[in-house]
Length: 102
Image 1 (cartoon, rainbow, N blue to C red):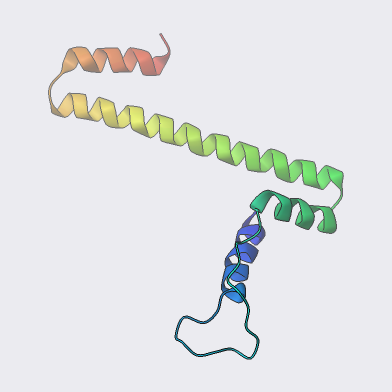
Image 2: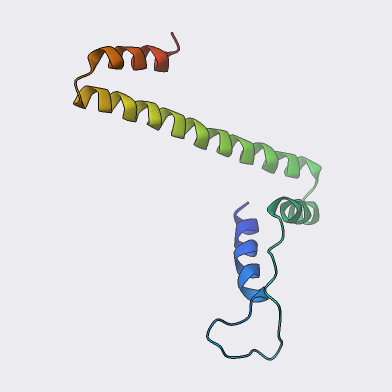
C-alpha cells in the first residue's frame, strides 16, 4: 500500500509540466493520476500470488477498521472529557453508558 501511494505521488510530478516556466525537452500534458485500486491490483498481481494478495487486502482492511475504531473511541473520550470540564455529570453518565454499550 505504501509503495502504491509513493508511485502515485511520484507519477503526479513526472506527468506535469514544470511550474517554473522552463520547458522540458518533452512536453507532457498534466494528466489525471491513475486510480489507486487498479494500480494496486496491477502491482500485487505482478509481484505476488493470490494468497499473498489476499493477505495484503485483509491486512489493509484491518488497518482501515482499526483507524476508524480509534477515531470513534477518541471522539467519545473527547465528549466525556468535555462533560467533566463543563461539569455536566448527567451527560457524562449517559456518554459512559453509551460507550460501554449498555
